[in-house]
Length: 482
Ligand code: ATR
Image 1: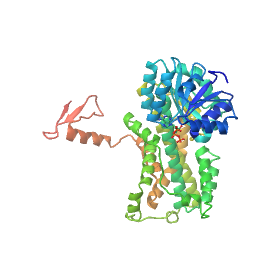
Image 2: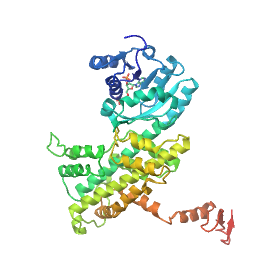
Image 3: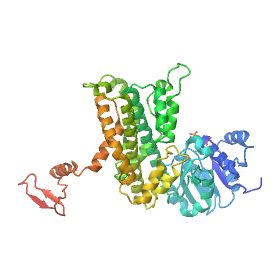
Image 4: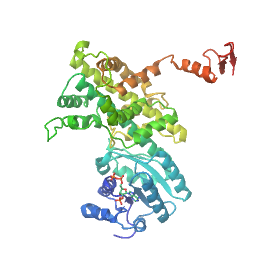
């Protein structure tokens, strides 16, 4: 192997890094590999060294020297301080024009900071969101690179090469400057939380309202996967639900502890949404639902110890099982639509705030393959933004608007029935409330403005003329213009 022969280098050879490195090699690229602990590099070479063209290095300097110019080094280490350490080591060894790519789940504000620091040194810094898990990393992930547009010219073809393809289109495109890539990856993960939660709520209702066994529910999900809900998450749900625990012979779902973990990207999505003032209620409720599920001590204390009031059953409500199953499917679809509409609202707000000029069509296009939320339905989102790039909400797009029209009666029935049965449906219910809020001509916000004016003289606007007004609440209650 000659010096400077590698088209791309990967730092960090844990599972994601190894798989990405192998993916590049499987596409005919020579890949430099380096890991802080050399034993991991040795182990990687021992296992995969003969499967492609790899150039292992024992030091960062050697690693950088093995890269073709402009050098392209992809960091796949733990997000946070480890990423900063590796960036600083690479930057010291690199030259202006070289490209450092962070493929980890970095917080987008860190990416903005790092890009500014590297740009001062003449280096390109690309924060790239990578979705698809271990399998995607090896066989084709969805990739969301941010950073300078110029760097995409040399980096893009490599990333597009290893990304998933849908109808021949790579699931990778330049998203926008600095933190844009990591921002949209973050919201992608937030949407993933909501999508998983609505599927969870549907399962829970089929199981505990309709009394259907997991293997039969798996079959129902398989049927749903042939229609509008066709998606990776629905597909794997059927797989999980049809799995039997080898040890007990029970459905695996029944022996899994019902406390959901989280690594933080859903929480970040909600925090960013709060800062941007965007109501991502679906994602928010999904994050809170995971938190509640994980509050094991509190749940141990409250389970069975809170009054239920009078509960009913589907039979008592006169609802047939088949009708209920179809209603639940529609409620899932409607709630999912709301979560996506909200996620895209957040991306637009983030893009406006930071001047990224993110094209939502690009996202819907690249999310069709490789990533966890891949779904047929994303084609409809591309169509919606093609029809009207500045549509105020995806719910207003003629196709989705018509769809919701066919779903909303079922959606309401499911929310009412679940409430009467005492079954929790945080995303189904909050999405419906969000939908009804958007529809409403009047909201109780008028009263809130009145209250704010009463206790804090915060003023209000009037419906009949321009200006800001204050009522002299503690005097004669006449109104003055503020
Ligand atoms: P996974 O969850 O897949 O194990 P991760 O925790 O996100 O991966 O990242 C682990 C990788 O980050 C490893 O390659 C690790 O290097 P070591 O094998 O030497 O532990 C790397 N890593 C973590 N901290 C690092 C640091 N400060 N400098 C360099 N690499 C670091």
